[in-house]
Length: 365
View 1 (cartoon, one colour):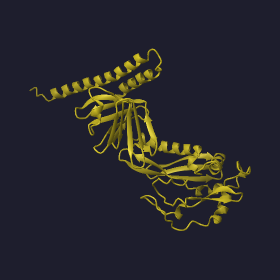
View 2 (cartoon, rainbow, N blue to C red):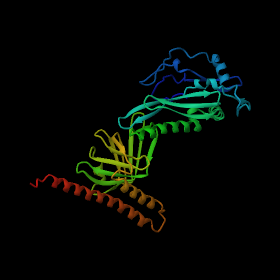
View 3 (cartoon, rainbow, N blue to C red):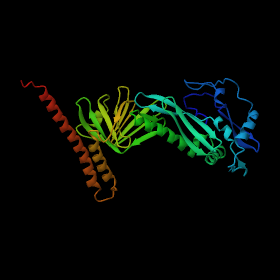
View 4 (tube, rainbow, N blue to C red):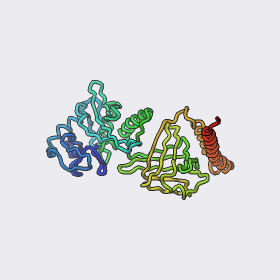
């Protein structure tokens, strides 16, 4: 519920003065004392340790905490005291939740998603609401019993005492953010959750030499991650034809296009001039930090859809056999040959297109 020390974003505070002042209250139990947003100074450029006004005397918040933990029909037993804790649903919205962040993958800008809680006293429910100027609003509902259990666990079991660290609550946030991402991907807008690694394995990648306009390799997996100040991508299972791993180190020359069946998207990456490129021939891997990216839909109407679907089926067949199996070497060789055949098919198609273009330029009259 308080922002980690290495975060960036909307609120600033010193490590000693966090959004939740933790004090011993009543029966000597740790309790959260929520501090409203307007008591903190917004900071868009990093941390700001100033406050609009001093944090109130902790004792003045005792009543708030007592109301927060009392008065509802579905109690949760406190493991330390054996007594029953309750949540005042009217004060649920006072809990400050860290914002979530996603990265616009095409222009490399971050988008903030605000998270708020809202209590519904009539239905005994707590709504987790995610909102953004870019995405609009989404919400997920917790029963009061579920919320009380998560809050009790946060206060009594978690060391950092952050609601976002509770697995049940974290899962809700992930579902909301992923829903934003998936809905926008269907509209050809591409986002990724910050500080989360994505691994795409259901699909095939094609490496194209931009200089000669030839497909010269394949790869089986694309992984990418957007962090606070960097973006990284890894291509694994690389198979080359007519090029060397040393040549792959040349920047602005090779395009790595991954045809993802799961995302229904083609992600095309090119290491820029300022990129950091690492090529590992022993592990058949290519890594880059900083790159340019374009993306486009990959549906059944795409000219390469059936080719990629067939290539994935060959991959699944090869992966189904253990390395100790007597047919393992044969399957592995067949898999590699299928990838080389895919490249050869691409070269033939390219030559045919060149011939068509050549004859199209001839004036027959």
